[in-house]
Image (cartoon, rainbow, N blue to C red):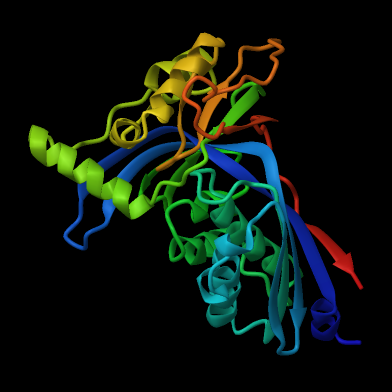
Length: 311
């Protein structure tokens, strides 16, 4: 069997890790309509399981796990599917593919589940390709798919990113900590969140926001991270969903630092102090509204390796 044929007979699997934004500043808007951003990404232990196999032409996507069928949408919009197509169109290989996603990351909450799946597909395909393109080229492909995808394609567990997420500086990860994730029973549309933020800035006259100087040597210290933790979306989302602010306060009361919304929401996370055990809290009981879901995970100090599986 030739090396090319042998490579096509292999599949690969990888854990697609979720992320949180420890810092998220939305900067000036470009003439194209896109906003520049400044963000501090951190991967979590919580992950989807992604399996990819190259085929001679057939293409399929199978999604299982913790997801409502109504959340799936058309296959052509799925980021894992789009990532496989981008890889094939860029490299000329493979002719086809099968993708299996076992979903564990909540959908549409700002934890980067779809982007993590896309990054995992790119890494898996490159691991079984007859002519791998390498991480640098993968990041170029990832940049065409969304602002979170380059980081979640990289092998960095922690990074400062600028631009549209394509400019990254990998950093040594801070000490591993337990992380509480609180998932309200509603989603936040990202385009709507950008609109709310733009309207708020027009009202205040602060529609042009620049980046800040950050002392990189402090970014392994959780106290320093807490001091610079901010999410520009949080206030405008909380103005429409007061539950967000209540959850942040509740996490702070538990000693979490930082505690803030991730991405454009609606997930809120809190980093627990070292060695601090905690009973999973309850939120929303006083309001009579559906209670948010609470998950306990850990911050990541590394990135899951791709496992190639000969058939």
